[in-house]
Image (cartoon, rainbow, N blue to C red; front, side):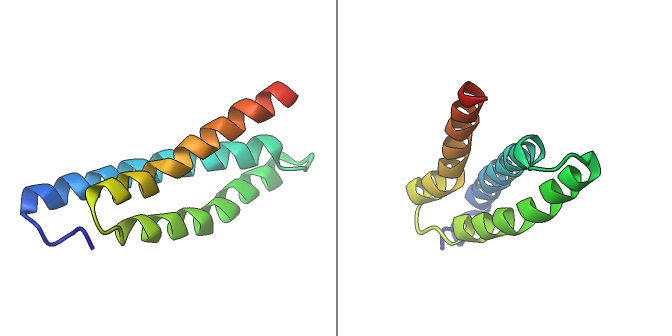
Length: 94
């Protein structure tokens, strides 16, 4: 685990993880709201909240147990890159 170095390094690492977690969660929730197959907007909102939460927590835990900073950045921001590409691909199809 990357934590265990100096306090300043730990704060930077935790901030990087939280920023990636929040960005990815917002992006995934937007995908669910836009593409969830329901006519009811409230169901889309519930889908965005309840389907995004488990995925985001799994990615948060996966990012927290990185061995070095490079692996942490790859794990934290890799899924944001994948989601962004997915949004652009789905926007071209629709």
